[in-house]
Image 1: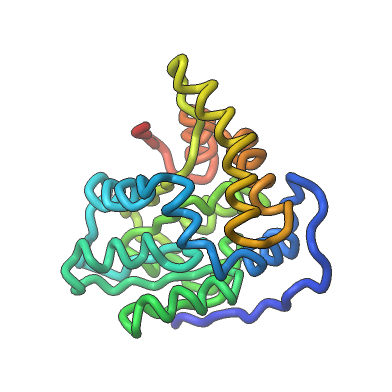
Image 2: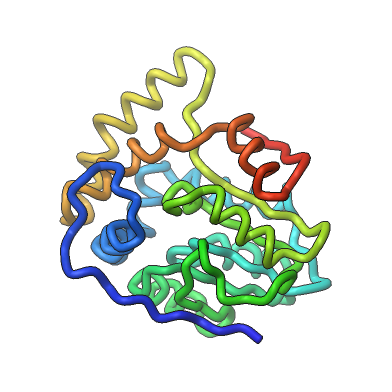
Length: 233
């Protein structure tokens, strides 16, 4: 059986740039839910749509069982998998921020169920899904290892666990340009468009900088019981 867990909304706003307490992250995303999709497309110059499409090609939909998308936000990757399978794939989308899921539910128009659930404590039995994915959300989980372990637990043996996430480019001069944009331009645009607190779009570059890249993330995959992880930049 599958169930959802209703989580309380925090009463105070987060203050620290890398405060990854669940209550702080949930409050931050609730604050920007109204402008989240618009800013994703604007700040990435629409490349985020391509990244999600590319993820569905690198890890194709498997119609032999249901698909779980965690930290789904407003459901863009879940919907990308639903479209890639011609509407024939059963996709379940979870996130612990209810206002984000409200936006996703409206976009999905009943095609996908959206459940409130914490990725570190997924409310599903072992091996419930043929594949498990996450886009731009794993770095927001308070404990990366715990999140990956839960994703692996609910994934069928041999099924893929796929993470789409930011990492700074390694090539010069792309890397300094990328970091300059992330630290100086992105927060200003994010605050202006969202009319939200300073925290969210200051947190984004800080969280990307702190998140393990490539080989380091593959090592955490192995520790989580997912050996042989590969990556594509």
